[in-house]
Image (cartoon, rainbow, N blue to C red):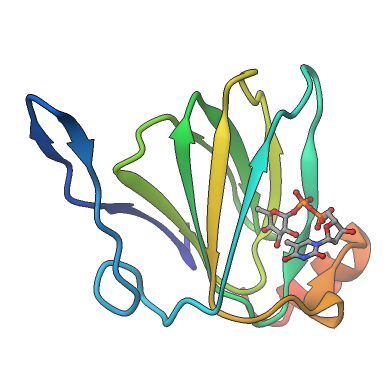
Length: 135
Ligand code: T46
């Protein structure tokens, strides 16, 4: 889908386990200004239901799995994240919903900007209006 992509990181494996390096502007397409993580999501919960006006993010599921529904006015796609060496890039103006978190899931998010509530579009009808101008 336009403005989204899967990124494959290195998975350095030896008898001691796995190590995945992720470097800003090298492995991901922006400088990282913020990191947050989502853990201990209860069964049946869906999060998200918003888009961002300008923010770029990469989502990495470090443990367990989670599904991400991505929408624009034209398309809808579901991506399952379950490999810690894979990141989901989500650019501006993509509606997202995160669901089917396994009990042990740890969703790490790398963001291009500091937290700013004004960058969110949380109303789906308003999102469609704005996104139709772009897509
Ligand atoms: C996204 C998905 C993947 C902060 O204070 N600082 C932060 O950096 C963030 C991300 C959130 N918050 C506050 C705002 C809300 O009061 O934490 C609360 C929960 O945030 P929200 O409902 O937006 O969480 P999600 O899981 O729906 O969405 C989050 C990100 O907000 C969003 O950018 O793409 O994760």
